[in-house]
Image 1: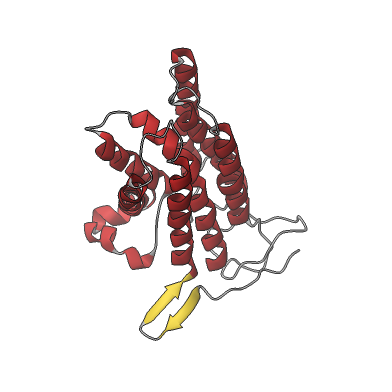
Image 2: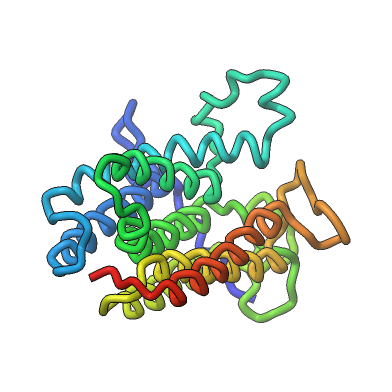
Length: 262
């Protein structure tokens, strides 16, 4: 069993101003998107110019934050929201959903491109940069000692504060490795040369959905939701199934269509 490295969630305490590691992880994700986006925008097949990446990031931040919060309330805390709709604004209590943030990003990307056309070209452009933020966010979860895994007897299990005295899977690190690093490498190198429009987006849907679905088997389900069916199906898995199916269908459609992003 490994010792959980207890880290103060507050990275910098300036009296009335406290800078949390979780917020820094978000900043790393956004800066990583901006830097990598500038690099990708120099390619001949880019749907945006390097100068437009900053505008795109602004839209993306809105989509992630607003969509993530709305998604959490609707997918994971609907009962509380129905009893008190104002809880959607209680951001200080925590609660963000990847699937909600993903839908939020899709919506703002559509807004950004609605007059320009090329929605899938832009999602292909954006997809390889998203895993940086996903990986950073999961590291933030690990630092906060939240969203831990199920009990385990593997040697790398950890005892998390507030999770009892038994060792658990550090599922946050599993997600950082798969949804962050592995997904980034797959999409970045696969998209290094022009591909049929929509394939990279389909790859993102497929692999994120698959990674998330598998990790949910060793991640503790949300206490107020538990399992949805069969003693193992979680909300995260249910929301990932459409991503897996949609990714497969999009890849097949894009390959048969055969139009390249260049």
